[in-house]
Picture 1 (cartoon, one colour):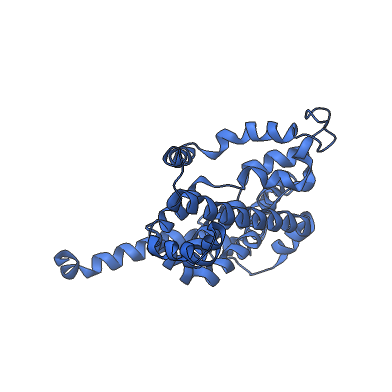
Picture 2 (tube, rainbow, N blue to C red; picture 1 turned 90 degrees about the horizontal axis):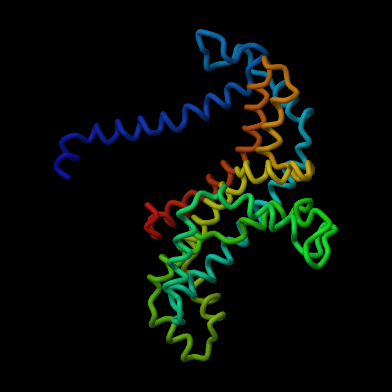
Length: 290
């Protein structure tokens, strides 16, 4: 505390440096999206474009099927976010407040899933979806067709449950007083009623935090969406579609048009964060995520 009082400018300097490091790449992406052919990469490098023009955005609209890409991204992200909130809240309540054999072991297994990088499971997930019974021309044994890999469900099934989400909700629900839950049970409330009417309203701040983190992760998912789009190009999402711009654009125009596409994909996430930032900060503070 004494050091902070003696050198308050050091804290401000660190915060300002962090803000610059965070904001400059975003501003460069925004300004590059307005640059003309040949401007990007010219030395000495200039942040400001010579003339602000919307031709790159028009080019992105012409080269990409943006309605389809937006539909796939919005549907997949909404389903994943809703499922993660529901399953994380239910599982977190069970692991925090219910007593049953194997509860601690199950919680440890949930924590163990967070130790592995997600892409380790992509190939097993893909094989499971390919051999999904009675889907995509498959028989009862999962043979003969493409399974779920040609449907929109392929984009969401591997992400419907989140080990991190269960952990986060469980850590928050532990702090809910047991006396309140016992009083509700004495009054005749079942476990589902206790969860829905008492636990869920109190977990709103951390639920908003989890929803925002899940939304950003699902919206920006690239590797899995790229793998699925190889089986069905109609399942491309915005990150995959934007990346395909390099294959049929003039190299002199590629980067500015890609930046324009990235700006279009970033806008929904940016707007959502601005709308929910108050709840997000509160949820981070209350959940101990910091």
